Length: 175
Image (cartoon, rainbow, N blue to C red; front, side, top):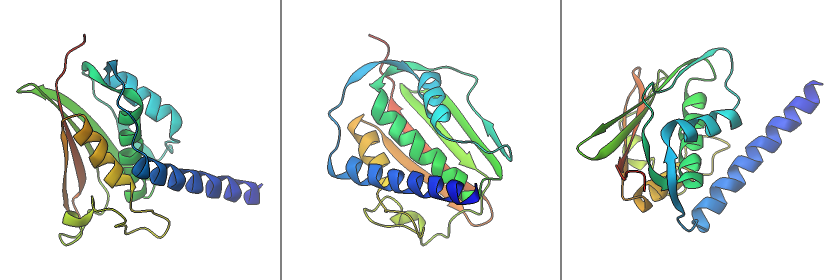
């Protein structure tokens, strides 16, 4: 049984890496639709195995907007998976959201070890990774997708204080 579980995890890692490469080399055509943050997060969290040792907090507020659902799911799968890896599948991940000045501000915070200050400016660079099994394309893809939506992504991190990714999107209301 243990061998099967290891093989299954290996297949999941390879699939994740292939998806990163494909999302980077072949960006999707944008398909804007009415959606909501809760809808996107529910879909993402259904696809990611959240261990019982992780406290996951999601926004109480549901923000409805226009966006490319599939592309945004890719962003949140990447950010939440990175947070899970940062906390080593044991800790807290908090997702919060608000609308301010016609912008949707979504924060994904983990209580992991944080990143050294020399790493932070490089994390969105193509092929940059600190992981043995990473492609260095996940966060690059996130940045590209968010920019295609007219937004931007930022990171706040310090060693010993965890990491927060801030996704800022224009607030396009339901058509």
